Amino acid sequence: MLLLAAGLACGFQPAATLPTATRPPATAPPVTFTPLPPDSGWLEVAPGLEQRTLRAPNGAGDVIETITLLRVDPAAHRFDVQYAPQSPRTVQEWAADTGAAITLNAGYFSPEYTVTGLLVSDGVSYGHSYGNFAGMLAIREDSTQVRWLSKDPYNPTEPLRAAVQSFPVLIKPGGVLGFPQEDGLPARRTVIAQDRAGRILIVVCPNGTFTLFRLAKYLLQSDLELDIALNLDGGASTGLSLALNQARIKIPSFAPVPAVITIAPRK
Image 1 (cartoon, rainbow, N blue to C red):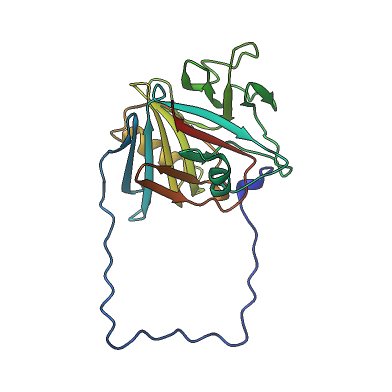
Image 2: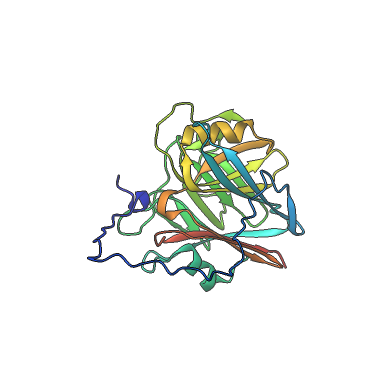
């Protein structure tokens, strides 16, 4: 693939002598593990912001994926897009540098860290718009919307403050399955969606077990009442940071990315 974030190559050289694990003290208490609940339910982080954790089968046997969700009211929270192709960073580094309450990876990029679709940051456009197959997070001063370009194409004259394009559209407007064929390629996933009430949802699946088809089908059959869902860059790029009030989420990206979506409470 052209995209840098498709994967990372690494090598391993075994040591001549393997180290011996340190034994615990004889009087050490037994180790216990508290499993995650199947569904945490929606938990309020701040007015207009909720978080939820799901443990759900991915449709392939008994493989379980941990799904982290954020549900955001755009009337209470401001969305932005940050872009720095000359200074790519991990999602965690972006979060530290911007100080945003929420930071997540954006769309696809080339090996030179330039976006492959359209991106708008601080009203400045970069790259070129994708075709009808793609979607877009479109941010204006008075609205934030997830769009399918086939139904609502990009207009160069529209007053966008920020935007990110990506593909595929997993759920088309009206709650229609948008990726109907199995590609057989599981990976870490980042999705941005909008429900029927106009709220923006962030969906992150970090274990790398969902294919695009299985994820699209799962989201469509869920109780999230999604109107549209757009796949963002995944694999090594997938990452999410939340730091607001007492809530903390850290899903590290495995590679630097040139662009992120940031969200902060409106003042």
